[in-house]
Amino acid sequence: MPYFSPEPKSNIEDFFDMEEELQLFLEAIKYGRFIVVSGLRRYGKTSLILTGLSKARQAYIFIDCRLLPQGKISINSFMELLEEELSRRSWARGLLRGVEGISIGSFGVRFRERSKGRLLSLLENLDGRVLVLDEAQELRRMGHRLDSILAYVYDHQKLKVVVSGSQVGLLHRFLRLQEPDAPLFGRPYIEVRLKKLEVEKAREFLMKGFEQEGVKMPQEVIEDALKRFDGIIGWLTYFGYASTRTHEPIERIFERASRLAANEVSNALKIYGVAEPRYKEALKIISNLGNARWIEIKRGIESRLGRIPNNTLSTIIGNLVDQGLIEKIDEMYRTCDPIVREGILKFL
Image (cartoon, rainbow, N blue to C red; front, side, top):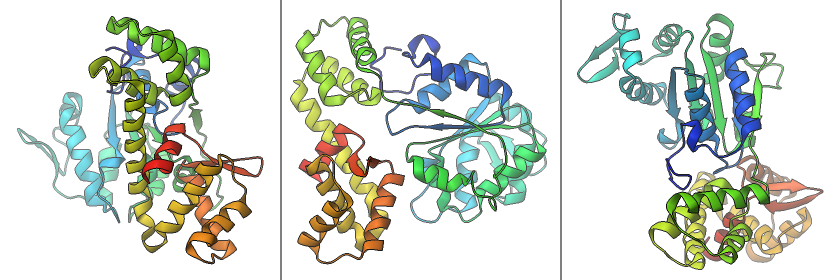
């Protein structure tokens, strides 16, 4: 699979760089029981997980939690996703055949009852395998506390669990690994944190990707792409794929990427209801200033939308940090992603 293919990678030959993170993940899968893979969106988390599991020859169940419905999540919805994933795995169908409460046929795998007890029974039968919960922060909306189920699995079974999330603050808020009264507190875990590519590595990625496609891209275009898309491998892949398929100029690809990012941000902010305009205004102020102080954000919002209490603003900023949309560095706030910043400024 070429570097510029938009699908997550699962073979080591297609996986670019990140040797240190991959080695840490492989060691975690070999020796650990609970692994957290964190990093902002488009940093390559899914590719790292799938490549690592493939290299380790490890059977796994992969649940993309973004496919869960909006609003409150029922255990019924979660187990429906489990049914679909188990049905795709031939080893799982063989393993679960004859297990009480589970039907297997031409329709795939079905639970006769979608309940906490049936879920625990299923997980007991997956000993030695890996359960991957991708974008696991979405599970905080679940009526049943899934972290208590994960703690039970950790204490009583040999199932390995991998959780990943691009909204890093929300992911840790869901897991509550450092809270003494939380179910998972005290359980050893290994965290693999993904970062942007360094400039030289990002340049190498683009040059090798274009070489795979048989395209000789002018060096000035590559340098322009490095400035626009930074070292975020997902955006570099987006640029490489678009430029080799559509032959559009980089300016147009950059604009389309920014529109896509703005749409994603807009969808992410809908959960705030009537407070959504304040969240949008905070993002616009931070993006416009590049680096913004707390008081500058407050003044900017109040000049457009009226008075805002200090504690309300602190909640807004904290939520935006938790969602991975902004970061705090030396008392200043800034957007984490240059494409997101451009999308906020032009299209939000």
